Image (cartoon, rainbow, N blue to C red; front, side, top):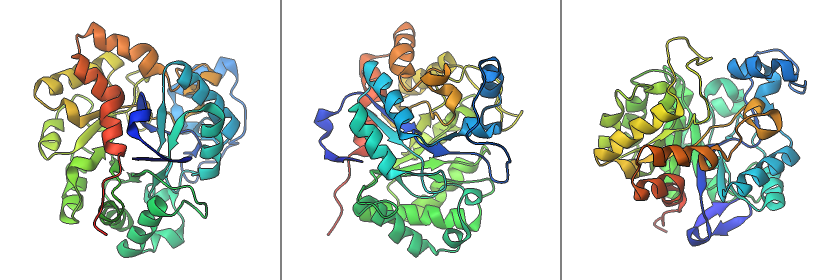
Length: 340
């Protein structure tokens, strides 16, 4: 059973799936000034994309009609399901997701949880771990933000580096909510090589099932692949979700050299050869307008339209391709039965 914004569906009815995207979002960094609704001129498009979230208008997309059109293009490339990981703090809009899903025919999964502390309000920051656990659980079992639309995944739970006290409580709460709701957990780790290990330590101590924990953004946290194997050996899932970003520049820091799509796939192929192919997910993490088709970007269908061919070029095993494009996301999204 997979919990979508239009209700629960059987995994047997779902095809290719993307585990980490944003359809409706406001990811403008706090205290950044600028017009969120400004247009992006064609002559500025490449530079705006290169500097990514630094342009407020680029990091803001809250139009459900735009989301529906992008989902329709994804469906034309063979896409069946997409997870919107815009948690609380990123302009989460359950009703808008439902409208976009209904208009496009694409299954959409919404997410429970909170983003990094800087993006959430003071009242939420003051909540105890128990209060957050109750809130996250209700978002999966009852509904999001006053609606009856339920989340099907916990996260991306936002983590800074170093972790704040609030973010630590959110991790503890996510572990408890996982046990109560049966949902898997997705994590946005801080930008430090030890961030992921610290997150796993907290989750494990709080009783989380690490086999149903996804560490996102390997592309920038462990960009050369070093340090990923110990994480996999602890049983978690790792995710490369910058597919379609084909540049070495990473706007958040000059210390990271991003891999290309082929570079990502070579790292994945090597880890598969070491027996960890079932613990890997991939996505685009689209959270800017310039990556949407309407702005000349690759859109949500890039992996199906282009990257699958690169997998064949690199002689990926057919079962690995199936796992990356469908089987592993659906396994993680399948709600686990919980004790009554």
